[in-house]
Length: 310
Length: 209
Image (tube, rainbow over all chains, first blue to last red; front, side):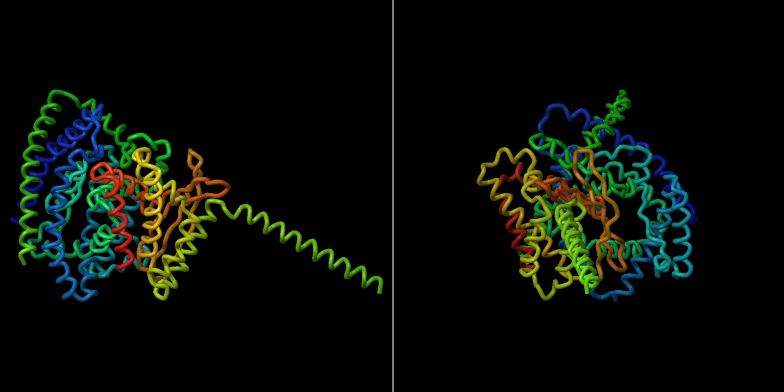
C-alpha cells in the first residue's frame, strides 16, 4: 500500500515532464522571435515582467501578513538549539537530492563525499539533527535538478514568479518537480511540511531583510540576484570573467545573461509545427495566467484594505 | 687610531648605503603601492579595522572612517555612470553630478551599515588575474567563523597611475550588474527624480537602522 502513492506520483511526473520540457522550449522560442526590433523596457530574461511583478507583490503581501508573522512566532517560541536541529534535519534529507544530482552530473568524487556526509549525520548525528560532518570538514554542497539540467545543456528559459513559491526559471519547474519527488520529506504529511516551510522562512529572514534594506526596486533586485546566484551554482562558483559594461555604455544590452542568446539559438532546430503549436498553447496559458495575476493584484489590494482598517 | 677611524668611516658609509637602499626600496614601494591587489588589500584592512571598532564608532563614526577608504579604492564616478547605462547620456551635467554624489553617499552608507561589527572575520587573498580588456580581477574570500566563506571577486580598472575597484562579485552575484538592472529599470519606469529620491531614502534608512 505504501508504495502506491509513490508509483502514482512517479507516473504523473513521467507524464508531465515531457510537457514541462516542451514548455521550456516554447518559452525559449518565444524569446527568440521577440528579440527582433521591439524595444522593450523589460529584461530579456523576464519578458513576463508585468505578470511576474503582480505575483511578486502578491507573494510579498502574503509574506508580510501571513508567513512572516507565523515565522516570527516560530522563532520566538522555539529555542535556538531546536531551530538549528530542525534546520539540520531537513538539510540532511536534502542531501539525498544532492547525492542523486551529484551522480547525474557525473561528480562522483563529490557524490562519495556527500554520501559520507549523509551517512555520518544520519547515524552519529541522530537522524541529521546534529551536523557532525561539518566538524570533520565535510562541507554541505548545493546541488539540485535544475543545476543538473543546466549541466546537461538545457537552456535556462525565462524568469517566472510562482504564486506562494517565489522566483523560478522555466528550467526550475522540472527541477522542482524532480527534487520534490526525490525528497522523503515530501511524503510524510502536512505537519512535517509545515515545519519544513517554517524552517525555510526562518532561514530566509536574513536575505529578505537585506533585500528590504538594500533594494531600490525589490522586484528587480530579487530577480537579478536570483538569476545570477542560480547561474553561479550551476557552474559551481567558477569565476567567469565578469562583464565590465564599458563597451556597453551607450548601448542597450541585457546585463543579466550575456550568454543567453547563444543558448537560445540552440532551440531553433526545434522549430517544427509541433513546436509552434506548443508555443501557441503557451500563449493562451499565458493569457489566462495574466487573468490570474489580475486577481492576485486584487487580492493583495484587499489584504491592504484589511490592514488599513485594523 | 687610524685603523679605528677607517673602520668607523666604513661603518658610516655602510650605514649610509643601507639607508639609501632602504629609501630607494621604499620609494619603489611607494610607486607600486597602487597595484590592483594592494588597493584591495588596503581597503579590506580598513574595512576590518572599522568593523573591529564598529560599536564604539557608531554609524556616523564608521561612515566618516569609510568615506576616504571607499573613495580612494573605488572609482565611484565610473560605477555611477555604468549603473545607469545608456541613460547617462540623457542626463544633464547637473543631474550627472547629482547622481554621482548620491550614489557615492549610498555606497559608503551601505558599507557603514553592513560592516558594523567584528566577529572574527578575515579577508584572504586567493589569486589575481588580468582580464581580456585590461582590467584585473582579485579573487578573495571573507572567512566568517562557523559559516561558509563568502567569495569576493574585485574587478579593478586603471585610473591614472593607480587602480580602482569598479565591481564586486560576492558569491557569484555581481553588484554592478544588479545595480545596473535596478537603476535602468527605475529610470525607464519612473524617471530621474524618483531614482534620486529612492537612493536618498535608502541612505536615510541606513543611518537610522
